[in-house]
Amino acid sequence: MPTEILQVRDVPAEDVAVLRARAASRQMSLSSYLRELIRADATRPTMSDVLERIAARESLDVGHDDIRSCIEDGRR
Image (tube, rainbow, N blue to C red):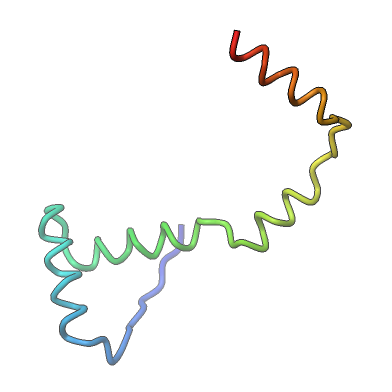
């Protein structure tokens, strides 16, 4: 996967200290830790993506009685 250099300016020193400590607690460099955070955020679907997937699902024709029956079956 191609990579790019990313620079973030004007990060408060207190925030950098927290991130540096978290990276150290995982025995990682700050760069590696931040790369992991960025990757996790970039690969997480947005709320609109999730809602679109839900809307695209086929609707089930299930009534209240069917749901009650399944719940009761699970309690037996």
